[in-house]
Length: 278
Image 1 (spheres, helix red, strand yellow):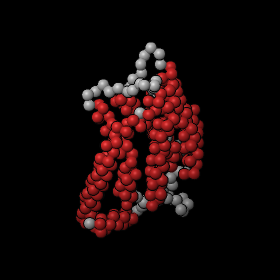
Image 2 (cartoon, helix red, strand yellow):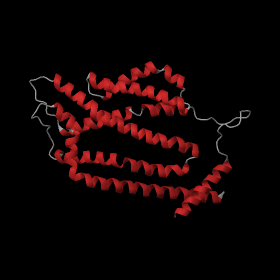
Image 3 (cartoon, helix red, strand yellow):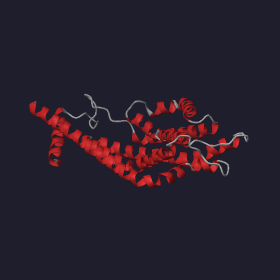
Image 4 (tube, one colour):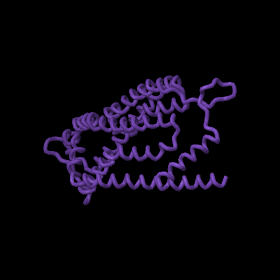
């Protein structure tokens, strides 16, 4: 018992050290990428502002009301781009940290979900930038009174863009949520199909809350969310429910939780791996 406690404590400390090392590597890589991007921060903001600038009347520019805003806002944009560029490395570090503690059937599920969720999040951002911004900004500027001059503040614009990116990125995660709910057995596929009308109502409520108060942007968020819900229902058909623990009298072949001996063997394997690394 004492030996097992010592092994557990050593393993816990070694995990903390490994977590620290991976966080430091992530920060170093992020810092290096950010330093490379800082000289191009102004160009990156100009690229981010392209949908708005194309919708404004010719000769109109955005404004900066803060003293240091013209410097800080492009730096924030550079940080956002640096995070997106280093996201694969960040996810690789996270996967390398948690993978040794997962069983084979868990690895087979987690890795595809991490990759798919990342791709869907990026697709949501691209969809928002390429399609939604152009449509919404042109619509807003067309209905704006001719007696006013539209000159958005660059900081307000950045906050708006980040909010919309987050909203659409999370919206495109809808298939992952549906698949996980089905896989974990929280709800069945039939139940998800039955609540489809309620989900449509919820989607439009969410769109009304997180998007600007115009019909176009609300439709551009709610309709993809409903379509992605259907994609999730389709994908859930091929994933299936997680196997349940076998009970007395059940047929063989069902998943059963590991025994105490198997757990001890797994701890010994992890401890041996940590000693080998050190």
